[in-house]
Amino acid sequence: MGRVATVNQIIPFSCVDGPGSRLVIFLQGCNFNCKNCHNPYTIDMCDSCGDCVATCPASALSLTHNEQGKAKVVWDSELCTQCDICLSTCPRQSSPKTSQYSVPQMLERIRKQVHFINGITVSGGEATLQLPFIIELFKAIKSSADLAHLSCMIDSNGYTSESGWQQVMPYLDGAMIDLKSWQEHTHRYITGRDNHRVFGSLKLLAEQNKLYEIRLLYIPKISDIDTEVNAIAGYLTRLPASVRVKLNAFQHHGVTGEARQWETCSEEQMLELATRLTERGVANLVLPNVYL
Image (cartoon, rainbow, N blue to C red; front, side, top):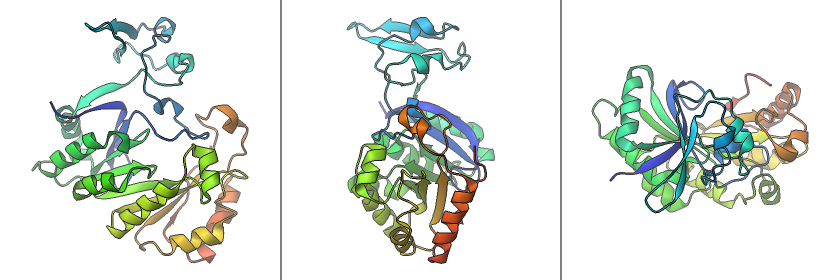
């Protein structure tokens, strides 16, 4: 048997997840627990407790048992109305609305869109938690005559190991990495993890000319993107000139818990930050198109 991935969602066409038009695969599961996560239901894997089954008004969820008696929640996408009551019911705030895809099944999905896209982006959750699947998928794409022209990219929090990146590197065209904050203690407060591995990933990808984009999240009074402008600008100007620097403005959409009380980032604040970075030599800046 080949590798199988737990997939939260597949978007057949996107123009904001890498260069050109792209099919985007969102994998379930994340090793960060960001307070500001806009998709918190992608963090945990469903443990099939069954609490959500009775609450589904469309009867799109059912609880089955295998021969060993192990329970599993099964989602019927045809019956589902996307009311998301199951998400609010789950004590883990996890989604039971996931699908299992083998590499051949995913290739079949890609081939349906191949004439309308320039590439594939695997995101999450955290994509690299299912890295063996990604490696097998990208390798299959690069070795298929009808798909080899597609670029293969990963959208990641940068926490995978150097050996993990080295395994996927031969089939990887580029990566987009989030840098949640500059200082380690701030990064740990926001995500539950330090940022040492993130900087290691950025360094390795930049050296291999595989770093397409670094993303900075501006959360006023919480993240330190604005208070550490000098240090951040010094770091960014040492990256290859081709690397895009994307500024993300924190908003409340999808956010739960204490982050709902955090101040959102306005366009004025973002433009001020962009000006300060530009004055310090940072080029190739990408700003948000909308502020919601």
